[in-house]
Image 1 (cartoon, rainbow, N blue to C red):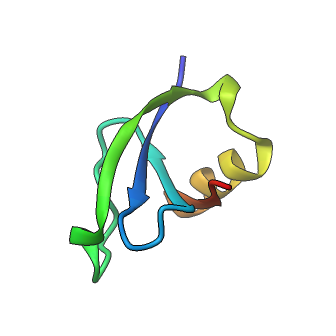
Image 2 (cartoon, rainbow, N blue to C red):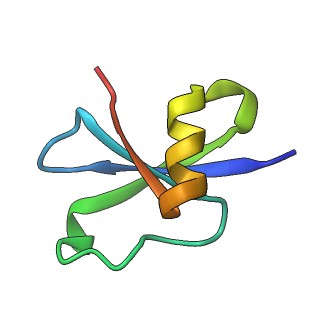
Length: 64
């Protein structure tokens, strides 16, 4: 089963960033602003997030 790591932005906790499990953060300028928050299964993510990960290698999501 596919799994994805979630990172939250410490300055904006309502913003989440998903990447494939184990791939780490993409090349972000503000990498220190992101903290690992756990891993989730594919079944728990909306199709739009999965599509963005497939296309871009990552997906931002409003966590509110």
